[in-house]
Structure formats: structure tokens, C-alpha cells
Length: 181
Image 1 (spheres, helix red, strand yellow):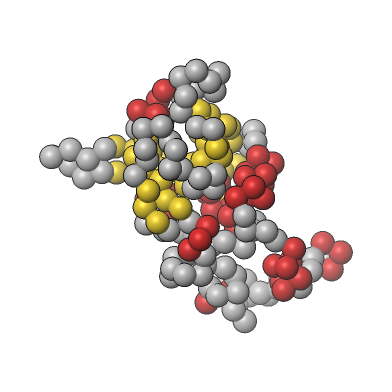
Image 2 (cartoon, helix red, strand yellow; image 1 turned 90 degrees about the horizontal axis):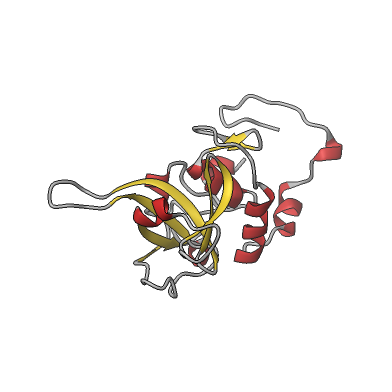
């Protein structure tokens, strides 16, 4: 194998497969991606983390999507510009499972909006994110997983799945120049 800087490394054949074969096994639908996100439940929060040892919010989104050969930018503030911008309806009816949801400071006349957190909408007013650990929370006050804090700082969503390989910052290992040989 080759690192991005050109150095070479080695891994056992028994735990590897050709990239094209790997890519053919992947699904890029919301249900599969959400199942992958759920498989990481309980992984601790680690600032700048992108592995099973620990993830931060944006690292969690990047890792989950990368496990489906979808490459997005590293930071939440950059991820907010990928895909179709969605203003969230009060009843959340315009969100779809798999949409990325962004949190932060709303704009005021004195200062700009600031994205500081990201999660993934999973349906039924629930979302999965990394905050303390990877967990599911809800926007519904009637749900035992209600998260009033994050509801109060909810900004907007983006729909990314229909835009894979249609935007420069939303691509796959097949089309990203950093992964070509």
C-alpha cells in the first residue's frame, strides 16, 4: 500500500481486498449509512478523532461516510457547504434520513452564523452524533432522548447523498485525486 506522501507500507492479504472489489460491496443509501453510524454507538468523543478509538462530531460524520466510499471535508464548518442546503421545517417533515444537520450560533445583526457541531438525521425527529460519545438524541420533547440544548442551537441541514461525485468537495475514492495511483 502507499501513503499519500509516497511512502510504502504493508498489510496482510488476509485483511485486505482490491479497491474495486471493496467498492462493489458498498451501499450508499441512507439505511446502510445509518446502520454504520449505529455500529459506532458508545465510541468516546475525542477532539479531531476519526477512528474506533474516538471521534469528534465531524470526524464521526467523515468516518461513517468514508466507510461507504463517500469523502467529505474534515470539519463541521466545511461539511456545512456540501450538498443541498435545507432550511428545517418546524415539524422536521422536510428532512430525510441521512441528511447532515448542523448546530451552532445563529446569526445576529452583530455577528455571522457559526457552525460548531454536526450530526446525522436518522428519522422520527432523531439524530446520531458524537457529543461525549456517539449517541442518538431527539428533537421531540416527548421523546426520552430529547436534547433541548441541541434543539436550541439547530441551524440547518444539508442533503448529501444525491450529490456524490457531482460536487468537488463530495466525492469517492474513485474520483478523488488524492486516492488515484
